[in-house]
Length: 428
Image 1 (cartoon, rainbow, N blue to C red):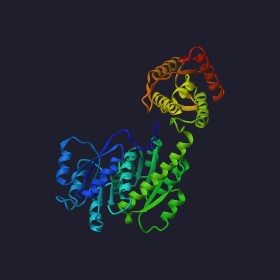
Image 2: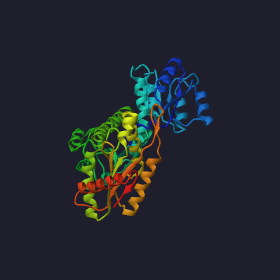
Image 3: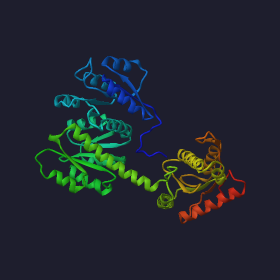
Image 4: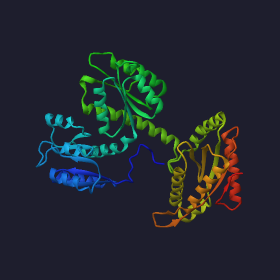
């Protein structure tokens, strides 16, 4: 189960590089080559870049462009690439203020100086952000349709999922429907519900490490920033002092703070080897799971799974291959159940599944299918050795007074499956 905070390194992403300087072009191509999922397609002029985009051979994830090219000395390439809806990062030696302002007049992702010692590392990190940002939801709240559109367009340039509202009341309605926003940018002075009241209401529901809030207000109100921060905002922006670079820096900093908190939380509830939930989370959330099922009079099943003859795998192939088997089973389990179910590594080679809205018949079919899928899977070690494993499964379908009782019942049926010859499901 891959973390939602990590880039997907399994998909090859092509980067259009348009750079006439041989040294910088070679350096960037070499650095991108070290990233297994990034492929650089290098052009040395506007004409070559046009040709590459027009060929239809490449689906570019992003573009890294020099501002000054032999046939495009004033950044003429930037709008041409943007017309093809390719995110643009300008990588240039020029620090001229007029050029910088011209670049930012386009909706580019970033403007990076070549002479910065950390520029290449920062460039790659920005491309990685473009991979992660589509999973992050941001809400813009402002009664000015013009300023609301400005912010929405800027955020979409960085590929965020963006929603907007004209006041605090509308914003709360949107959050009620989809509470998975990571960031809210809210104006202060709005009808229906102002930004301070919205911030206060949001803080009643979300901690600072769950949802970031950036307050926005017009210049002249000296207390606005303090009032926003005291009400629970993480940051503050003045409209009249608005600079695109600063805006992106503040947005990314707040998003990354939320992601770090989320990552720490995930590490505390996930098994490091399989990516499944750990035993602690199983009991903490499983108890609530059971209470909700009893309260709502719905069904819930508890299954215990154990890898057959796992000790022989470790003895015959080594613990590295044993870990590979555990990771492989973790992936199969993760793909076999819904987000609403709890799939956890119970300990060693034993796993536990809690699934709602399943009767005995449906549960038997589901776990029989899982058993067959595990048996059919082939695992290949780094030495080229291939092996397969089977699992025994015990399932409890009757709600009990406690989760521990359901696990005990499922465990008893698991050992019955073992005694009966393994590689089978026992449900009664």
